[in-house]
Image (cartoon, rainbow, N blue to C red; front, side, top):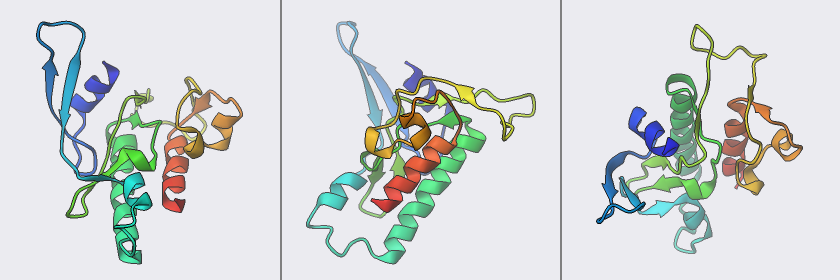
Length: 161
């Protein structure tokens, strides 16, 4: 339910767009969410032999620019931490458009009166977030006070991959 609420409040060209919510008939507990269609995820492209030679320097720069743009929107305007950024949650269409997906672990950032976190502020939340290979050291060591830097670390891991 939190994922749906967050997706209803955000719109950016580099964030997956929720098109529709469908309740199963008869109304049991099944909910289906319809999103934009993008042909690939970054993890699949990285493993694909068809993508050999696809990842040129301009393509990598374009992908990273779009990811940074989407993440900047999430953190500064939408006030949302993604908390599970990884290559399989980065979708790419046949035109090279990139969108961040899977907001199942996302959470709104509580901000101060001016809408911004001070550099010394951290939010106390669960440390059971982010897929292991994209998890920052402080989360691996059990820290439960963190800010948007956890998403930036994960973004760096996606870049390195």
